[in-house]
Every structure is written in C-alpha cells, then in structure tokens.
Amino acid sequence: DGIPLFVEELTKTVLESGLVKISGDSYELTGDLESLTIPTTLHDSLTARLDSLAPIKEIAQIGAVIGREFSHRLMAEVVAPMPEATLRESLDQLVSSELIFRRGTVPDATYAFKHALVQDAAYQSLLKSRLRQLHGRIAEILEERFPDIASTQPELLAYHCTEAGITDKAIDYWRSAGERAARRAAAPEAVQHFERALKLLDHRAEGRERDAAELKVLIQFGPALMLTQGWASAEVGTIYERAARLARGLEDPMELVPALVGSWVHYQGRAQYDAADKATDELFQLGRALDDPDLLLQAEHAAWPTPMLRGAFAPSYKHIQQGLGLYDYERHSHHAFVYMGHDPAVCGHALGAVVAWNLGYLDRASQHADDAIALANRLDHPPSLALALWFIAGMHAARGDSAAALAVAEQLVQISEEQKLVQTYASARILGGWALAQQGEPKEGTEQLQAGLAIWHRMGARHYLPPFNCLLAECALRAGRYQDAENYLQEALARAGESGEGWWKSRIHLTRSELILHQDAGNEELAFASLRTAIRVSQEQGAKSLELRAASNLSRLLLEAGRREEARALLAPVLDEFTEGVHTADLRNAKALLESMA
Image (tube, rainbow, N blue to C red):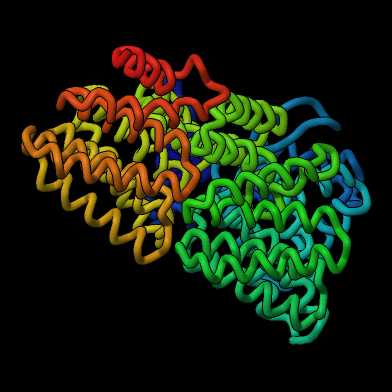
C-alpha cells in the first residue's frame, strides 16, 4: 500500500525495546544490543508487536476477523459485555501504536488496519476454532443489528458465514451478492460471487434441495459469464447444459426457461442454428402451455436473430414486432439479469434496425436505432447499451457508412473496456477496424480488425464470421491486396455454406464485383455476373436495400457500356419499391443515377 512497513516495524521494535532513549535530536543506546532479537520477517515483526500489546491484542484480533476496516459500533456489539470505557481505551492504544487508524469520533468512528499484512498477522494469531466462533458471531450480529449492511453488502455476510461453516446461509448470501453485482453491471464481480456459491454447493449432500439451490445460482451465473467470456464460451455451454438437466430433473418448467434461453444463446454463438431452433421451439411450447406472456417474450427474443442470420429477414422482423408488442418496461426490465445478460426490447430495437434496413424500411431502421439507445440509457444497463451499439455499428457497416460505424465503434470500445465485456469489445474492434480502413487507414484498420477477430476466435464464437471475413476482404481490397481479398471472400462463402448463415451473401458478391474490376477493369462480364448473383440473392432474401445497391452498381456499369435502356429497366422498378428513406445516401444516389439516364 505504498508503506515501507518492514522498515517502520523494525524501527519500532528497537524504540520499544527500552535499549535506546531520546537524547536531544538523536537517540542514545542504553543497553546491550545483543539482548535484542531482530525479527527475520515482517510477519514475525508484526506478531512480536501484537504480543507486546497483550492486554489489547484480542481487540486487534477481533478487528482483523471483522475485516480490514470495522466500525466502533460493530466492534462494541461483538465484544459485549465488555465495558465501553475498556473498549475505547483498548482502541486508543491500538491507534497510538499506529497499527490501526481512526476516522471520525466515537461512537460513530471507523477503524482501518494500517496495512493488510497487519490485519493478516492479527488474524493468523487466532486458533481455527476461535476464528469460526468469531465469524459466526459477526454474521449473527450483522443479520440482527445491522440489516442495512446485510442488504447492501451481502458479500460481507457471505464471507463470514463461509468462514464460520454456516454453508446454507453462505450460499444464499453469495448468490445475493452475485445478483446485486449483476444489477450494478459489475459482471466480473458477479462471476466471482457465483463461483463462490457453486464451490460451497459441491460440499452439500445430493438431493432435490441441493439441486434447486444450484439451479438458482446457475441461471443467474450464466448471463454474467456470457458478458465476461462471450456467448460461445465452453463454460457458458456447460453451465446451461447442467441447468437444463437440473430443471428437467426437478420438473420445474419455469426454471427450465432461463436454462433453455441460455442454451439457445450458446448455440447461437457457436453458429449451431439447428440446435438453436430446437431450443426456441421448446420455449414457444412452454410459453403457450403455461399461457405466460413473459415466457413468450423470451421465446420471441430467441426467435428473431436466427432467421436474420440465415437471410430470412421478413420472418425475423415479424418476431421482433411480436416481441416488442409483448414488452412492458415495468414488468420486463429485470429480464436482462435473468436471460442473456441484456434487455429484450433493447435487443429487439437494435436488431430491428439491421433487419429493417435490409428490408428497405430505411426510416424505421433509424427509429429502431434511436429507440434502442434511448431504452438502454433509461435502463442504465451498460451491457444492454453495448449490445445496442454493436448492432447499430453493424447496421452502419451494412449501409457502407464508415464514418458512422467508426463513431459508434469507438463508443462501444470504451463501454466494453469499462465493463469488461469481451464479446462487444471484439465486435467493436472488428467493425471499427473496417471503418478505419475505409476512412483511409487500411493498414491500421486491418490490424485492428484482425485483433478483434482473434479475440472472437478465442471465445469460440462462430457466428458472424461470414460478414467479418467480408469486411476483412474489403480492407484488403482498400489496401490493394487483391489475392488476400479473394481468399477472405472465399472463406466468407465457405463459412456461410457450413453454418447456413447467409445474410451477407449479397454483400459478399457485391464486394467480389468490385474486386474483379480492380484486378481487371476490362473484365466487365465477370463483374456483371457477380452483381447479378448479388441481385438474385437479395431478391430471394427480401433484402431490398442490398438489391438496390447491387442494381445501382450494375446499372452504372451497363450505362458506362452504353446499355442505357437495359440499365434503366433494371434500376427503375427496384427504386419504385421504396416508400421511405428518401433522404438516405443510397436512395439519393440511385435516383441521381436514374435521372442521368433520362
């Protein structure tokens, strides 16, 4: 703690030995130094100092059991029926010895050990039986006399119950501490508390009661772990597999729901979309069987991403609209702490922005993005805000708006670093790296994107790899590394074929057409073929915005080749289908192109 403790303690040992006296502005030796035993370690020194304070040593020991800091009022309760005057005198002596410091005035004073090692020396000087007794006494007093501490610092009660061997209470308090940390968006802290609870559960006898207690911890542990390790983490998968098994064994459908939702998220992160569908189907069956709108909300929540990733934008948007229709802020704002680690409506609006843009609902896409940010800020839940920023940055990348994508990605990096959110941090580096490359920094942008992608792979994540590889190809194209760009596009298509994640197929073929023209400006027919593939894929998926971009690019090439009527016949009907977003860049550019053909 920045204190030269060993030097200070050795000095005090000499001063308190009686072998020196103050003589003016110096010290004078008054005895034989050979009679003084110099401690060989700091712990020995501190122990010797405590032993020299024999009458008040017990107060120091009890304070050490309470913690690095303790209040006068709590100490008075623990040492009762010791007279108040005796307690004050003992604490005064400890303060004078500089082993502890005091803040405030008695009885509202608080005390703190000068150094953690001072507390440790006092703590270790107690027998184990006495330690357990004191921890139990402190836990009892905190519960009975200090209910505010018990409710606001459950981890303190959990610690004392753990050390006292009061296992059942300790488990409950560690779980409460984890829940409280999760609600403060302190995911790493929550993970530690839940892990302590699970470790204690290992020592409980098997049975329904134990299984129910473990299940309660697991379904709260999962969302916190998702935030710190990512959806595809092997440990996340293990937790939810265990939770589902326990819930089925207990025949508790309500507890099965969060386990199914967690399993769905894990399958999604692993790009195991068929398994994700099965979990979603079971969620709908449970929600309908129980006629529970809360469960149906989570079923819709699970149902909207997978169709989008497969390129089925209309079914995805239908689930988003149905889910948002079920959402009520007062009723469902706690769902972020039970399911997936983020708010369902924030997710619905954020993903809704991506889906609506693809469908050609350009104004609705902007409104969804605004609503996602507004709701996340109202919830004051950073992980939900991070998710919203991730999807919105992705929407800007899909639109080709690198400046907007970069601004959002930079905000996302900051939040993710502050909150230790590994998955959104990786996505921010990926999307921000692409945007940076498009803004004229291809080398730095590519390095940033690849760093984010490396994190993505370390998490075990397999979803979003087709778009990420496409973005990497666009960075390579920007840098003039055409063979690398071709390799990345091939990998993107291969990933899409393996997983069925085809929502960026049109963009991949669009990028390939640009690559073809950069490699050989005269190879127009091959570029035409790639753009026609992009148009066909976007039509099959109902992705009007991508169809417009591909049609605009192909029309421009046809116009340059002197095929004006063919270009106009291609672009005009696509442009006519748009009923909103007249001020967006894609529509303005397409209209200007069409007008140039008049």
